[in-house]
Amino acid sequence: MLKERVLTAVIGLPLILLLMYFGGIPFAVVIFAASVIGLFEYMRCLGLEKTPLFVICAVMSAAAFLLTELFGKEYLLVCAICCFLLLSAAMVIKFDRIRFEHVTASFLGYVYIPVILALFVLLREKNLYYVIFVLIAAWGSDTCAYFAGRAFGKHRMAPVLSPKKTWEGFAGGILGAVVLAIVFALIFREKLSLLPAPILSVSLVTAVASVAGVAGDLFASAIKRTFGIKDYGKIFPGHGGMMDRIDSMIFCTPVIYFAFEVLEKLH
Image 1 (spheres, one colour):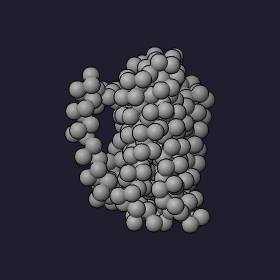
Image 2 (cartoon, helix red, strand yellow; image 1 turned 120 degrees about the horizontal axis):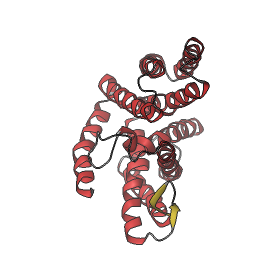
Image 3 (tube, helix red, strand yellow; image 1 turned 180 degrees about the vertical axis):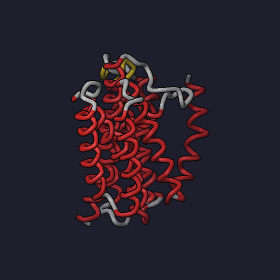
Image 4 (cartoon, one colour; image 1 turned 30 degrees about the vertical axis):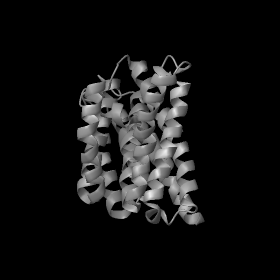
């Protein structure tokens, strides 16, 4: 299992970094594809992947990525409202098959995955180097937590949702992510000149985002436990499905996006 995880990371991470570096339409298309795959995995948990609800959410995901790419983040709210209205209309038209709980769960999935990942694309457009902190807070923290947990883990953090998580691993993950963020900020300090006290700023934001990432991982686990599945899919050997890989990143992205936006205005 560990060998598969390492091999997937070794192959996948350079590709992601390359796409992030060039940005633009190719990067947006890849993130959009990841969001639709993640949305499909989520809807499959609910048994709604073959219903009009998934089609509506997928189409509105495309609209969200396209409009935000062209006009900015304000259109995320427009797309969310349109998605809600379309899902509601589907319930009215197909009330014998589509219930209120289906609509609410579908709308949650739309905001949870495509809308937040559209912010990830906007963050790349704002500053390439900001996106790195999402990866550090999500995947860097997860990696550090894994090794800290194996070395020192004794006290379980969430025995029902994630039996292998420990408080020692949690602390090691946050500390490791902050150290990685500081090293990155020292190397690319001039690229972070819009932030007040860049080293302190990225340290605090990364720490908060790392905590959010753990919450995101536990939230995804809660969904899986609710529907009695182990992994969302098998697209990544050793990692599971798309949602198994990006669950923490989804929670980290809005924290970093809005934190850096506020810090820039305070500078």
